Image (cartoon, rainbow, N blue to C red; front, side, top):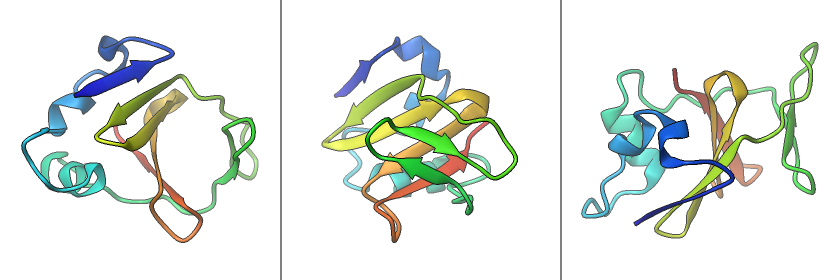
Length: 99
């Protein structure tokens, strides 16, 4: 079951259609297999875990728009089609542009 906080399922566009409760793979693996560009982590972002604000050198900070929970995974949507999955990567999260 998908649960959305801080927005609506419609705010996520087609992104939720890439997730299937009956598929045992993680959200990252399902995005990688079903999204046309796959899941391609983008390096260089910094995350303030207290505020969940993303920053990238030379760009203004990004505040989260919405959070979606998928089988215990936390997926965060940011402006400009940035999507973060918490719990992946060396720093405990990964971000990918999904537009």
